[in-house]
Length: 314
Image 1 (cartoon, rainbow, N blue to C red):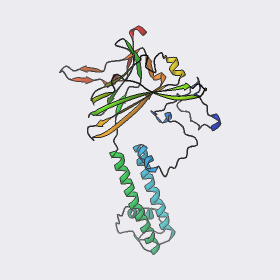
Image 2 (cartoon, rainbow, N blue to C red):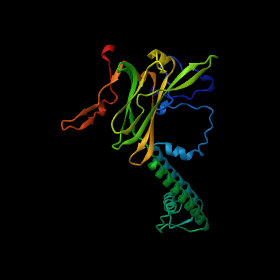
Image 3 (tube, helix red, strand yellow):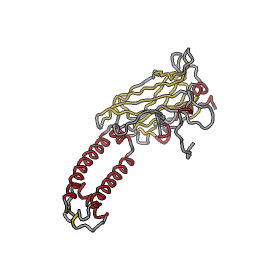
Image 4 (cartoon, rainbow, N blue to C red):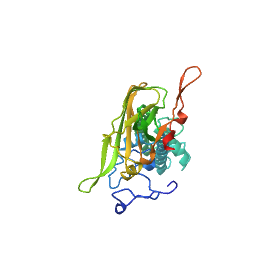
């Protein structure tokens, strides 16, 4: 439920199966938002060893605010070191934290305006340490910013729901995706995996993975919308399924899409997932492709996620 703080569960409160009823949030392997992430208990997290990976994963807002905060804290610490020895900075007001702070800013950035200068051996030693720290900080920050900008990313739009309805007289699971950028994705491929809880002969409940056969899993150019379809025949893991059985088996459809971005000539990827309540039965997607009066093809993304119930189901 929104607005309610989530407490970390204790080991004694863990269950082997998801809770039934109530306002429990369905478990999702592929996180769409922060609340979907799976909690990890007892896993060692050497944050310093994964610091580079962590700095690439966080949002730009957190990255920029974190970098500025670290920069200010570092200058404040060096300013305090300069104030340890009175008169360490020539032309600075005695005991002035502001003068020491701005002298630290000039030193760590190797600006050196010349008005404030180190006056003692102690101050020169601190300046030496701060200059080396500033050079390393600048090198690391430059590398991280470049790595974040140069990392290939895809902006693939997935429909918020999947639908099950007849296609050519056969029940078919379908969802659609599109490229949100103005360029094209070449050799785009899609894979769909069904995750389902099953009991073994020994009574052990396991999470099984089933690859779904798609009517068409590859398109040479992802320029418009791409509807992915899986025919539910006798060989399909969804054969004989119902909304109630999908809920009972705690299923999840994991979707991955890969391709080559024509602008940067690098492979990009995207993924999403669908839970049982996000699969609409006896529905079909509304048409979003049309033509303008001058004969140009147009796609109405305002209705990209819309699905309509079939006439027989109303």
